[in-house]
Amino acid sequence: MIGTAALLMIIYQIVTPLIIFILLVIFSLFSLFSLKYKLPLSNFFLSRFDVKNGNILPGRGFLFSILGTLLALQLFEYDIALASIIILTFADPTSYLVGKYLGKTRHFLDKRKNIEGNIAGFIISSVFALFFVSPVLAIAGALAAMLFEALIIEIQKIELDDNLIIPLAAGTTMFLIRTFIM
Image (cartoon, rainbow, N blue to C red):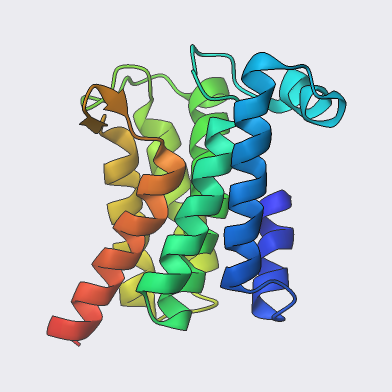
């Protein structure tokens, strides 16, 4: 829901990359302060929506989705950036929910995830990406996003969040196909 609202605000130019950057800085500061102090507003949201999986940075997934959105808008052409953002918006939660409630087959790349979730995330995000790019780009971007979402990518023993990986993998794939194949 938040992702869809954010996407609409980007499309209608209510939110610009500069505003997204400012929000990233503000939310990062709130996250860092909430490590030491119980801030009423951030504590309310973190206690209800933050995934408790040993994160050292509260609101990590939300921060990485803002960063992934900002990078997509800065790195790719507008239509590819929007398709990458919509893939993030729909692939990640679809993959999680279908995998959790309907998943039976563990993914060979990450035993914490299910193949059924990745397939559902691929299908749903491909359909929504069609609003912005051609079918070839939509399918390729969604497929790359779901493949990279299943990988565990670490830098200096810090696992990268899939909310950053998904839009970058999708956007890079669509950009490369458009540049070198189409």
